[in-house]
Image (cartoon, rainbow, N blue to C red):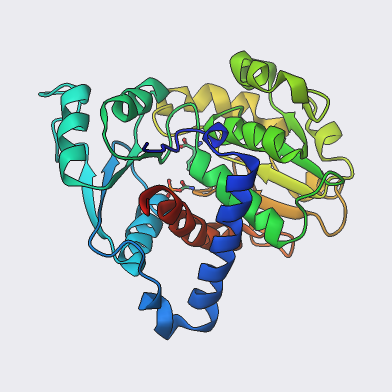
Length: 307
Ligand code: CP
Ligand code: NVA
């Protein structure tokens, strides 16, 4: 039976660690033996469709490169290129595309669209970001913490900013990986209640507050994301006001442990949710996070497509 990756919850803990271990091997080949990058091609002869309804730098490029290295052929389709939900129903597009390719990566607006596409597709579907979730990002970010030996029950992981798609997937990942996560958002922009309901048996590990200082006090890791996500541009003026106290700047960072790691999924809106001095500073690991998207997505593609 095909396996989709629409949310972190679609993977067991054991599967997550298998993906991390394979990503380590692939990272090693990429970093140490670039010339041998084509030596491991378990997806030879396969094809991967990449359907993007929103812009993307990291996700698109890392999936395309990942497919190429693994021997698969990527086919990129922007919303303008295909009929998806406009002159053809989503169901029909999913049924047809899955007759040609071996897996589909999709980035769109509603999570229900991703789920409907998966329901009508014969091949694995990967959620490359919806308004609700960004599971590839969270999987990769927890891999970054795993590599940094910070993926254990003793760390304090703080998320400061909008209770959005990235935050939701980090919450679901924290529940699965038993990470102490504290999320600080304005009341109006807290994570969706049903996400918190999903993880209710883990509530003692995941705390929600409106106080960014409390969240980062003594933190090992501080994570933030844009205040205005793709598709929310109309809310920009209001959000910039409400979120001002949630900016990750030197003053907020000074409350965390001196060696705290600063994370951001990127793209960053510098001067809004994070200042230049922090994102470019010694605590920042944002480029390491971005690179790991390649390794983790390679491992994910192998896991879902090899069978
Ligand atoms: N972090 C991330 O998903 O970036 P892109 O929007 O550039 O893909
Ligand atoms: N929350 C951001 C994440 C971008 C990777 C957005 O949805 O635009």
